[in-house]
Amino acid sequence: MKCLKCGYCCINYMVVIVDDPKKGLCEDNLIGHLGKGKPCKHLIGNTPGKYSCAIHDYEWYKETPCYKHTQIEDSSDCVCRIGQYQINNYSKK
Image (cartoon, one colour):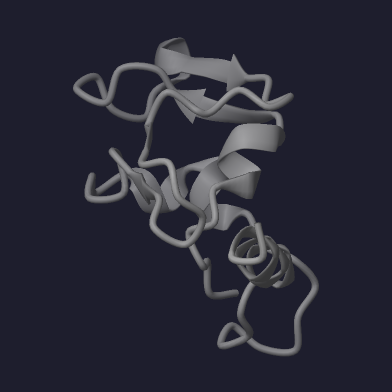
């Protein structure tokens, strides 16, 4: 799935995240991000389609639940349906 950087998942979904990026991915450095409309502490930006994540460039990022988040899709080339919906509707406001 190709993430469209809409921010929806990072704001609304409950997921386990790395607390302190300097400590890396280890059991005592994981916390629960509750979502419920509150942005993940690593989310940068304020516009659907233009968000970024402060920890994407760490070598351990590919082992995190965030990286492994996906949807049922035909191939990894499919764009995120939630992202497409969010971006399309944001531009209509």
